[in-house]
Length: 158
Image (tube, rainbow, N blue to C red; front, side, top):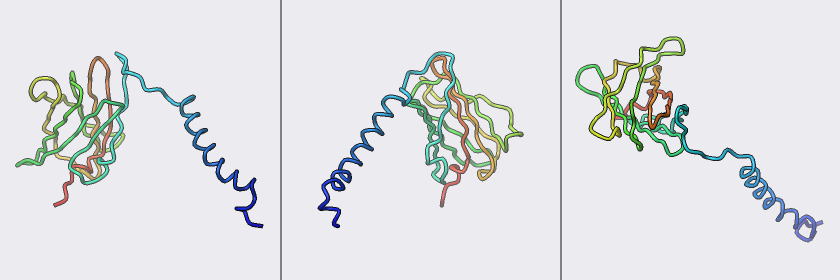
């Protein structure tokens, strides 16, 4: 028996994918999380963008429309310079290097570069890009945004 000649099998083959798509979007619309504006006094986790996992030279952190971009510049001497740029003006930024969950260096405040709070920088202590992580907390409009990134992105391919 040929399935293409069976009206019931042909109808099911056409209707089933349509029902799957309609139900997928209906469940997302009904039960999915609705985006909302940041509330004062609340804290929000920043998620690493994929470029943080590779030797790209830069790393992006994001939560909704709040975005930060990190770049580490090698300098003469042994202390790299961490530069942060933001889409929104920031009130302050704290960073700390972490070797593992138990050992974390004391957080240090980043220095604003220019007016507006969109660019920040700090001189870091030497670190191991394969092992160390950078923990970051940024304050904007009385909300706190925090994140944790691997420093593998600081390795630049020659």
